[in-house]
Image (cartoon, rainbow, N blue to C red; front, side):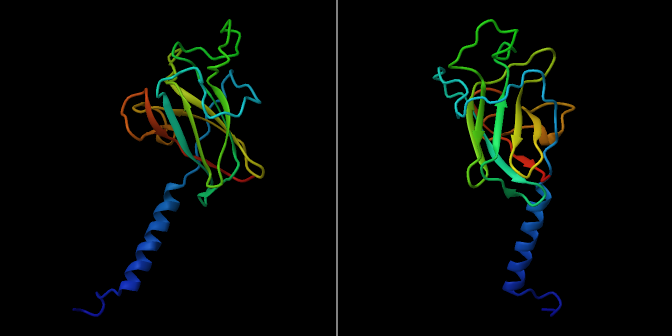
Length: 186
């Protein structure tokens, strides 16, 4: 075999690790911003279930809050979430006469030591020609606050980085979805 084509096991492993690190770094892109919208309310309860009265499997949304561009976890980041109900109405607004306190579809969730966050909710509704979406506001000391929205595929004209990754279903509804939030330092 030609000596220039020979690759040692160590060289192969080091090359593979360098390639994997480069691929991970390439995948760590800053999450695009999106509109806050008129229905944001600060200081929502810290809870992982946005509709406690509902007994269906619901929808599980999870992901990681990471520092951009290094892709390192941001432990303790505050992830605020809110979305419309199936009719397209938001709780605790003038458009909703009475809010169901056991199903506010709003919450604050803290990322764990590994940067992971998770919450259970119901499928959001579409309204005013807007695609179904979930609002996110992510903050942590030393980082710029990120305001964005997560959409469900397939959606034309929406940045692919704002589309949830379906983990076990292809339709909006019960299932598991993943959405990573990469935030930049101040």
